[in-house]
Length: 353
Image (cartoon, rainbow, N blue to C red; front, top):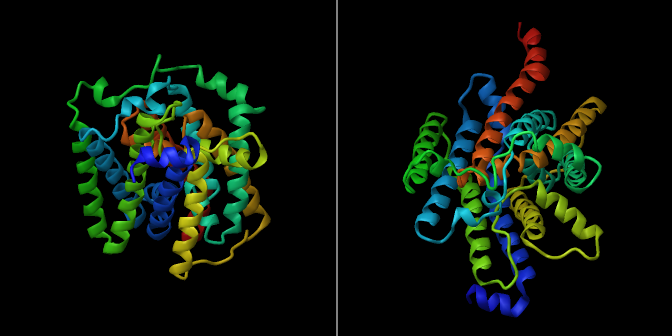
């Protein structure tokens, strides 16, 4: 059955939501089994280690680049048609939002995508933080925080559309694939040095593959749909807010974002259940809870200001070489490392001494 037949049977909106569920299932299973987490990678790197967490992140990032750029070379996807590339980007939003998000994910002990995966495995801390993140994201998109987001984002914009780094640097189309392969080699070297098993390698690569699946499916649907369909992929800032509103607003419509979040939840839940890793967990103390809640607020506002979360910018946006996504990712690393140093490393040093 091709896409046209699916659309004719169930409609464009339900088809988009179905594609979101399928993409989310792949992401949820792969992220849960590989323990993929940008926060863990940045903390590990900030403490002078190039360990398993960093290796997993590089494998995921490189896989997304290779699959997405390969799909583009094969004509299965066009980055220029994506929502991220066809609208103006914000350099100021990427910088400020990236720094805030990086700080927030260290305080909350996980980025928005990781919180969703952990919540699906029985982690009640992540449930609370994830809900706060979603509410703050919605407030930043259309609520009381939206004017502040707009002002900060308007300080420095890219122009009529986002910047494609491959085109801006006047590189050939296949350059993106080469960059992905270079990152893949680095990831494999780190994986071998840290003795990462084949299963973890496969699942880490599966997270990046999920990003490519989302891009290709939404692009394919946009080519046959009568109504405009956003070409997008895995991200958790907008989808978290949209999914929350879908269950609160009876007039909300089905779309890719609404299917993505439930897909991740189902995939991560089933994966943890089958692996015997599902376990109920709660906050250890009031200070930890307070810190996580503040971190979730910073992530929610930072993600909407930066144009995406650690996954939306750091993997999905990075895979299409969106200029603001790469800048936001860099700032997320800086914000996370600085926060880890100020809040955690300075506490650990007296104990080590």
